[in-house]
Length: 100
Image 1: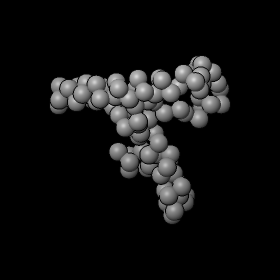
Image 2: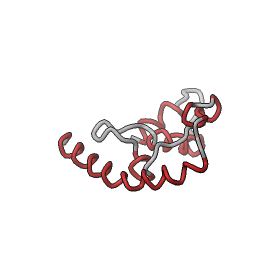
Image 3: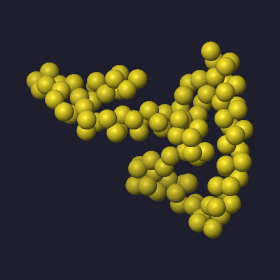
Image 4: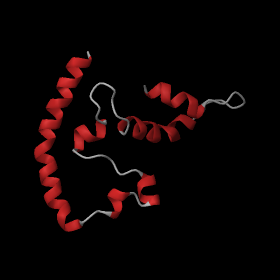
């Protein structure tokens, strides 16, 4: 998957690949970590951290979840999310087994 995503970003017939792939690798990993899996309907980022990643475009354009962020309520929300994370992982495992 990494190679499939990396090749179109660095391919140029007039120029050899050289070290361009090294510069593009972080963006390839970021795209793979924030893309929902077809099998479990969650992103890898969510399955590890329990919430979706904040994308740079969310910050630039002031997405609703960024504007609605409340620092005082964030801690309580984070604790609730951590409690629900185990359940979300179990649901993901069931979806994966059904998918396979």
